[in-house]
Amino acid sequence: MKTLAHRNIPITIIGGGIHGVSIAIRLLREVPTAASRLTIVDRYPLPLTQWRRKTECQGMTFLRSPAVHHISPDALGIVEYAERHNRTSELAPPYAQPSTQLFWDFCNAAFTELTPPQIYYRFEVAKLRWDKGAGEFPFRLISTNNEGFRSGCVILAIGADDCAYIPPEFMQWQRQYPEIILHASQFAINAGNEQGSGGKIVIVGGGLTAGTLAKSLRERGHGVALIARKELKVEQFDFPPVWLGPKALTEFANETDFLRRYDIIQQNRGEGSITPDIMESLVSASNVDLYPKTCIRNIIANEKCPVARRLQIETTRGTITNVSRVILATGYQFDLRRYGFLADLIAKHPIPLVRGLPCLDDDLQLYPVQNLFGSGSIAQLQIGPAAGNIAGANLAYERLREKLLVLLSA
Ligand SMILES: Cc1cc2nc3c(=O)[nH]c(=O)nc-3n(C[C@H](O)[C@H](O)[C@H](O)COP(=O)(O)OP(=O)(O)OC[C@H]3O[C@@H](n4cnc5c(N)ncnc54)[C@H](O)[C@@H]3O)c2cc1C
Image 1 (tube, protein in one colour):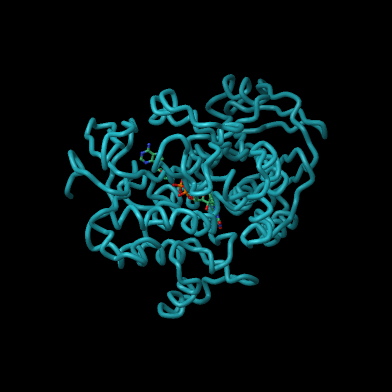
Image 2 (cartoon, rainbow, N blue to C red):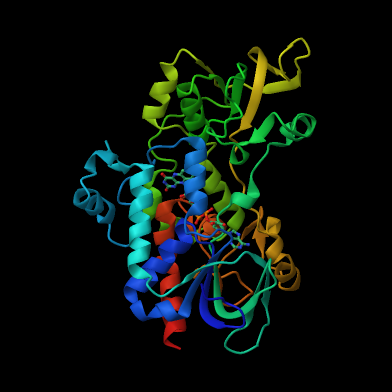
């Protein structure tokens, strides 16, 4: 594998997840020769590793979104791929949601087809510098191995994984029982650590991660309690689909107050929802207890249990005993300040933030830094509630496109 050291690259995408790969594929489809001027860097050796890991850790077998949302510009790409490979049974009704394996295979094929020249590099960015006025390649990227290269433009497609959200009331309990209380991002259903434990697994949260984990764990024979602060909402999608159309997006763009935009996103995504099929499997299961509209008042050690360390959870709807694991399926809250590799850049060139989210300009540029762009959760204040989803990558590309084409033609 070639190295990036000391090279000058016109366009660098930090993050080889769904967003980074989508943007690269869309750009390469338009300008195939861009392959020699475009690079994706990621801390993992293969594209989409993080997405695959997360779906496997939760036991998610089908996507929530319809088949038309994927990483390449042809809407029917995944359906045609399924037909070509006799895998249409992996498109689930009612919206042809693909199986996670089909989605993964399709993404790999789409990416490989376009990239005979190497554009993907394992390179964890430890520092990003912007030397204003330093000519054609003002960005300097330095890896955790101290390798460095320069770039003319950088797109941050860094997801939100470094921003796992733990509700404040859980912080103290998590410090007390760190081996039992985990954020969902630290938990894997197949890690083997739950086997034969016999205790109850408590999942906190009302979104699809909570629902999927409850389903996967109950299918593996565990007793599960799912606790949500609000009524459990059942929806196929995690945001109203109008957020992919011009009407809602134009109204959103007309809102000049970024704090108000933040509130609109919260209202439209809420605290999450569970898809109808998963909810059905939970409601009918004998080993799942659902606790909607329930708050946790206290978590203490269950001293009487002779076998292993157990917890007792006091809720507004009674006490749950013999708890062997608490999984916080409480999501992520993007905050630019939590990305260490950006710390110096932010200190030197203050980027306006609202609740940790950058106020990007219309081209998704992190003003005042020129030619530094964002896609994914980072771009919520411009793209709206769909920003972090698969479909958000297409919306982001539409905004970035002009600038990227100009950069490539320079
Ligand atoms: C289990 C699960 C199922 C989902 N299902 C759906 C669905 O059905 N439909 C839908 O629309 N959305 C879905 N989503 C939401 C969303 O599409 C995914 O979270 C998606 O992975 C977001 O893509 P991303 O590229 O923004 O982030 P990520 O996939 O997290 O990719 C970000 C990448 O940036 C890299 N990175 C970060 N910092 C650095 C650094 N300093 N140096 C180098 N690399 C770095 C990371 O290694 C990572 O690979 C799902 C999410 C999860 C967790």
